[in-house]
Amino acid sequence: FDGWADQVRKTTEMLSPFELCDCWPYRQHEFEARYFYDDEYDNFVHFAPRFGDIVSQGHYAPEDFPHFHGIHHNRMKKKGNGNTTMYDRSKTINFTTTSLNSASIDFWKKPWTLEWRNLGSYIMRFQPEYRPTHIIINSGLWDTDHAIRDPEEQDAMIQNLRSVPNLTTIYRTTTAIKPKQQIRQKSATATSMEELPTLLPHDERLCREFDHCFDMRWTTRIPRQYYRDDLLHFLEPIYRWINEDLLTLVTGGTFDGSAASPLGMS
Image 1 (tube, rainbow, N blue to C red):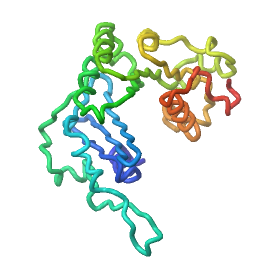
Image 2 (cartoon, rainbow, N blue to C red; image 1 turned 120 degrees about the horizontal axis):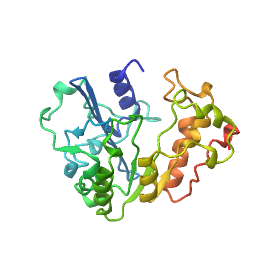
Image 3 (cartoon, rainbow, N blue to C red; image 1 turned 90 degrees about the horizontal axis):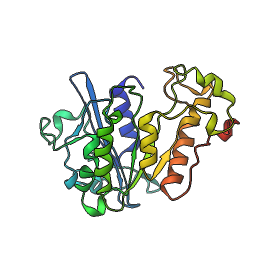
């Protein structure tokens, strides 16, 4: 992708008409809240990132979901000779930098902000039939500039999430930055999780407190050729493996943290 705006535009087009992207740049920061909803299969995924200590916020009240999404007006339609099924994108709502001026909402009015300590309260604002059944949390590549490392913030978040009925909590540790830990060279031939780096204190606690720990320490074994040039993100098939493992965990399977067997690293 040629920058953040290009990434937003292209990924939104790829996921159309099922996704609404409440994505906008403001004062050197980029906010990105995504809502994927397929009413036919009853699948709803909400992505709400918090970049370091920048508080997440958005323009759409969770109480109004899915009415603000527009998916009800974007069902698949037959076009052309009747043999080709295409998506009618004419009414797709994409709140991006290109559609900001035409959006029928107030840019300055943001009905929600999201901090670690109010995650459960935010989830409870969705109507019961659309309330998420799982929450997946990851602190990301933000070093010490992150409130989630504060034990008091962790306490508040854990208690707030426990107030949500029938919610499965999953904590995902962060994937490895290739050049940052010299232990990665040592662990290239590791054969068990015990030989991998120890968890950071906040990772260790949240893995213990949440229902499941989705442990990404195995990514320290990934060879350089599977990294992108930024040495932060991966090439195919790494993310596919991660997503398949995550789906297995969400649907009731087990994940023991010893993935990457296709690379001969287990």
